[in-house]
Length: 346
Image 1 (cartoon, rainbow, N blue to C red):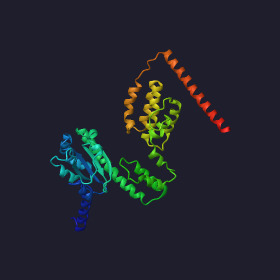
Image 2 (cartoon, rainbow, N blue to C red):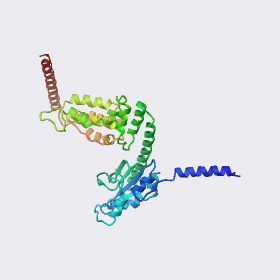
Image 3 (cartoon, rainbow, N blue to C red):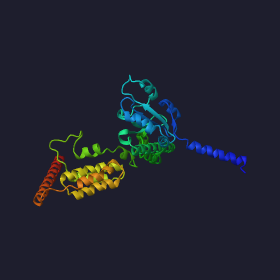
Image 4 (spheres, helix red, strand yellow):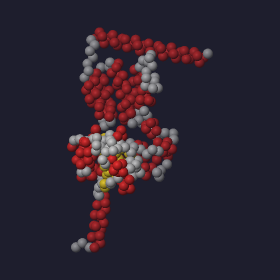
């Protein structure tokens, strides 16, 4: 026999469970969605009724489905139409639904965007990559879960960091930086205040730019245009790129980008295909899930399959020419250094 006390206890337990799994809530406008939003934010499906018919079809086959609601979890769901013509039937209503919500990147539809409860856009992904087939729609649902989970984790970590100072705070902020959602606008300022000397290397990690900070330096340029008399120093490129590749304070994708500069120059220098393939595999091994990691296997197959078409005499001549060229470069550097030393003495 169940007592009234036990019965009430069970009822409370069921209510708690029900609240936890209540799932997504749908809203009719962006303003309403923000009012209802919690830590899971607002997830928006953008479609073009009068210019993108596939996105309109996906409104029913993808967005308005139990599977999409399950993927949205406790986020507030909203569908916003974007008309190409302001005079189209429904354009006025669409403007009311959208309110102050920003347009999707490059006005592409279909696009899914995630906003936090303050209206800050934290993630977006587009139809060209994720929609159109059952498999692609499943991938889109997985991404919805991933970004919503990352947003919740971001809220949790930022709340934790708010009560800390110094490097303890900086460590938490660096965890925030690794999440696959946009960081708050004042994030870098917070990190700099927490670790002004950058002892944890977070500022360097988050501000390193492979092109501007490495490529431009190696190619002796400030705008991407090479000087007429510029000649790449392969040994210097190799040294700098390998140094960056081993630097664990940098993000994996930036280390891969740096090493790819070396790989490209190595190919131009004519190193054997099997060695080139080995270099590309190192990029993949470091971080298989980044863009560089994903393209590495195909690149290794393509470049690693190439064969040197020169005969033995031609290869020997090429090696000798390269040695002579390297010798000239070293002599030029030595003469330049001596000239600078002479000027200093005078």
